[in-house]
Length: 380
Image (cartoon, rainbow, N blue to C red; front, side, top):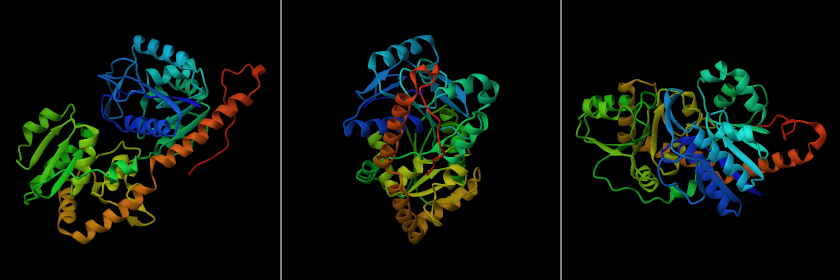
């Protein structure tokens, strides 16, 4: 089976979708499946199996900035790669995103499995409903990464969806060597924009007197403003860090803090922190609340979104109550284990084969532009 994975977002920039794409491709290739990733890149491709499609254009989307490549040159490269590579199946992430993902739907040289990640709102779905539904009709099997993502897609795009939650490369986080530290440490990792809640974390420091360290990784449109406004010496601004440093800092942090205000369909970063054995404090938004619960046991401490005082209290509890911290770490480890990317890979391999079999089974004389088949309901 020759597998093509299409990502609409630049792989040179950190992001949840990009992480899922690269992790899944690495595992597929380790298992012997010939896999290529097609995606924009704003620098050297991060892996040898990546086919770069050009540079991205930062575009406002869902309260964030999406690094997509909607320009004609990127689409021509996408078309060329799709036909040259001779894929047996295409796995298209965020399939209606402008650029290579949507182009893959138009060209469709092979059966398509499409994964929807976005939650919250997508005004473009409503504004471009006929085009969006046409594009969705080109997908043979539709997958949503969470109940919230499924609801968003199904509200605008008729059809049936399977639910497959995102995964993590469990062993890489479990075996990461902890980053050295000289004080109790809180770690933030994410884009510096309002939706991610970094400002709330920085405001919470006014309520914390202890000599802690706060590692702030990532960059974004709010970076310079936040650095100018928050000059607390306990803050260490790390800028963009590579995957190895990210893994090691997750393993070394006493507390991982995810203060997002909303728009998160699934808390993969929480699972990564749990796998690395960090205690997690996070906003009580739907995408995080589902990750933070394991059959009624708490895998993370949740606080009210946007409440700096509540976040400060949560951080102080995890640093001063070792029994609570230990309990969250233990439950978090078990929670992360259920999302091993190896298991997700098994699920997607079944869907790839199902899409291929469905395309073969459809009569060539049907005249249909789709090579898919009618889906039954399925979820997990």
